[in-house]
Each structure stands twice: as structure tokens, then as C-alpha cells.
Amino acid sequence: MPVFMVERNLKGISMEDLAGAQKAAIGTAETMRAGGDQIRYIRSTFSPGDGRCMCLFESDTPAQVARLNDTAGLPYTQIVEALDLTP
Image (cartoon, rainbow, N blue to C red; front, side):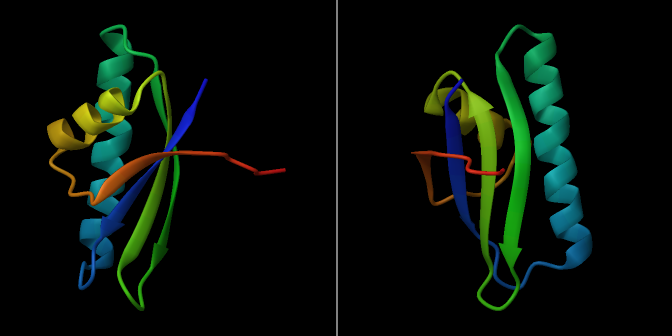
């Protein structure tokens, strides 16, 4: 299944709000899967110095990833296909 990277600018976000955003992404993915969508939150990487956040999702389409983020109320600047090279 393809992997998509969601790029975000979260400069100034508190760690509490960052954790809440991650929970929202995970919960929305679970809800979408229960409804038949093939989508899964993989993980996020956050750079507190400049506020960049990269989140990886497994999904059939980038449109599903956009819908997940829109439904969860999570801001993003772009969604691109990515290769998850975790060993």
C-alpha cells in the first residue's frame, strides 16, 4: 500500500496540543478503517526548533489522507507520496 507524507507547520504548538493532534490522527484513521477505508497512521516526526512536522500514513490515495486530516481538523501544507525506509 502506498505511503503518504503530510507536511505541517506547527511552530509554537505546545507538547500537549501536539499529543492531541497525534491522538486525533490515530482516532480518525481508526474510524475511517471501521467505515471501510484502507488507511493507517504510521508515525510523526516533529522539529520543535522550526515547527516542521512530518506525518506518515498508509493509504490507497492522497485524497483519503486529506480527508482524514480535514476531518480531524489538522492543518497541513501538502501531502506527497513517500517511501518509508524504516529498517
